[in-house]
Amino acid sequence: MEELIKTLSAIDEPEIWKDHTNGYDKAEVARAFAEAEVLWLKRMISDHRLFLHPDIIAEIKSQGWKPGDLHKRMIWASIIGSDESRYSKKRMYRIKAALINKHGADWWEDVYARIKPVYAAKERIKMLHSGPAVSMFINKTLIGGEHARSERDEALRMIPRN
Image 1 (cartoon, one colour):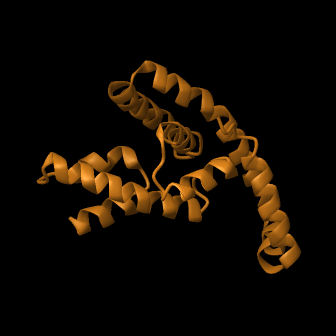
Image 2 (spheres, rainbow, N blue to C red):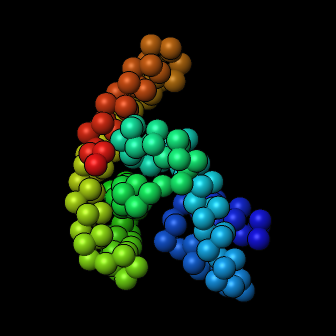
C-alpha cells in the first residue's frame, strides 16, 4: 500500500492515477488516493508547479494539505491552465469528461471559468525568467530573488480566491 501511495504521489498527472491501481480493492485505492493527494499537493506547491492564490495555498496548508471542494476546483483549473504540452487540448477534454462524470457539468463549468486567470498568472510568471541574464540575476542575488518571489506572489494574486 505504501508503495502505491508513493507511486501515485510522484505522478504529476492525477487524472491517470487510476491507471496504476490494478490489483487493489476500492477501499485500498480510496485510502491511497487520499494519502497520495496530500503528498502530491505538498510536492507540487513546493515546486511552484500549481498556480493558486497565496491565500488558498495557506488555507490548504492549514487544513493539513487536505483540499476542500472549492480548492479541488482551483487545483484542476491550475493543472489545465498550466499545461504546456502539445497534447494540452486533448488532455483538457479527457479531464473535462472525467470531472463531468464524477462531479457534474456545473462543477466543470466552475473549473473552466478559473482556467483563464491561471493561464494569465502563469504567463506573467514565465515573463519573469525571460532570458539568461535575468535568470542569473534572480538566482544569484538576494535582491533579484526577493523581487522574483514578490512578483510571483503578485501574479498568483491575479487568480481569484473564491
